[in-house]
Image (cartoon, rainbow, N blue to C red; front, top):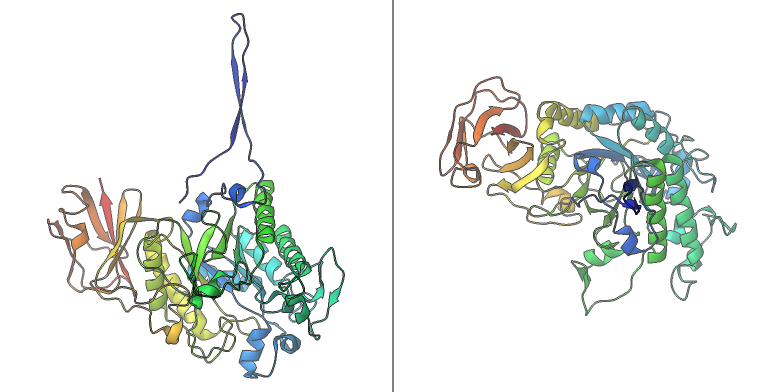
Amino acid sequence: MRIKIKIVSFLFLLTVFGCNSTVQTVNKQEKYEPNWSSLRKHNTPEWLDGMKFGMYFHWGPQTVACELEDKKLNNLDAIEYWTGEKFDAKVWVDLMENAGAQFGGPVAWHGSGLLNWDSDLTDWNSVNKGPKVDIYGSLATELRKRNMPVISSFHTGDFWSRMWGPLSKKDSTYLNPYNDNSAYATSNNGRIASVIFDGWYDRISEAIGKYQPDMVWFDTGFGGTVDKELKKEMYKGRLLSDQSNVHRGVPEYYQQKLISYYFNKGIDWGKEVEVIYKSHDIPAGIGMRDIENGNLKGLQYDPWIADIDMSHHVDWTATWFYNPKNPIKDAGTLIDMLVDITSKNGRILLNVPPMADGSFSDSVKKELYAIGTWLKINGQAIYNTIPWIYYGEGPTELTLTGHHAQGKHSGKFIPKYTSEDFRFTQNGKILYAICMEWPGESVAIKTLGSNGKLYPNTIKSISLIGSKETLSWAHTPDALVVQLPKQKPCEYAYVLKIERF
């Protein structure tokens, strides 16, 4: 986590001829300018460091098309069938709390020109169309009642086909979604028209101003680097010289303008906020990096987040939205992901797909309740923790990393952990050793031997979270050996709580 810096201005009033001197300190947060150097002064909020598990929801006309299994039904026509009669923000946030989520929010704009908030800019919004409710606003209100930070995401893709209604505050030209508006894709000397980005900026800045999100996440299209990365045209921020330089995405001017607007709004609101982005969409050090439906290998130096789909991608029709053909990941798999990612300085934003009517399937609720049960017992090893010197121990490693790595081939590359696999987190003097599978009578953790990082006579006590039994243990040079009770304290991962002097 980057060091938090407060801008302090000093006024020194010095008098002469023997008079007393006075030092006056005035705390003042400088406003951000729309350039990368200024925006890099922003720091990851301290409150976000302890947030490890959040939830968000892909819900829209795409859900209708999937449930009706009508591949000819496009997003525009599907809006007429999207009634959302069972949507209830309280029920959604109840589900989040029961699952143990710390933060959450809506997908505010995804895949069409329909906005999921009460927009004053266009009548193509969820209050006037579809379910006729303010999805974003009602969820934000309910989350704040429970002191849960609000995240909102924007997935805009091909911008000229995602702009319905008046273009922008500057241009009242009405884009009819039934017309072909693709001319805007090349009307700026072969690039996307600036007026399209004006409309993009106006819409997102409106949502930010209305609902004051604590986190804003910009998905694919914001910078355009993910597409080149997935096409193997870019590697670790370097454009490969023998590949195309064709690049789509929001111009830097608009990126800088929007991020500075958001950061400055945070100052006005009196709270710390964060922007989340993909790959190298913006320069490093300005926001938090997101890995889509994937994971990273090894302990990361900077805080990061993975947005994980709760569904396996078997049928790729409108992935991320509820699709009866796509099975739900079981709680054990999702808990393993949460443990592993937390140990690597990350956190999870879990996509929970509602059905078209706004309710949740029994399979979704079953796995979320199981996650919540596990977190009620073991949450202290996840919430408000930080990584340790080593993120883990054991034979199981990721075989595919990066964007979509855990979603390819119906989850084929999601690791299957063993009783020899451990992950470590810590909070203060407490070190948590999380065994990914039940080991049986005893466990030996080589990393924690007295020849390693834990010196002799530094362990005060060891307990198994969820169990009342007193444990026998030995701190040998080669390993920390712990005798375990016969009865498992919970399902899934098992947490040894190691208190140190």
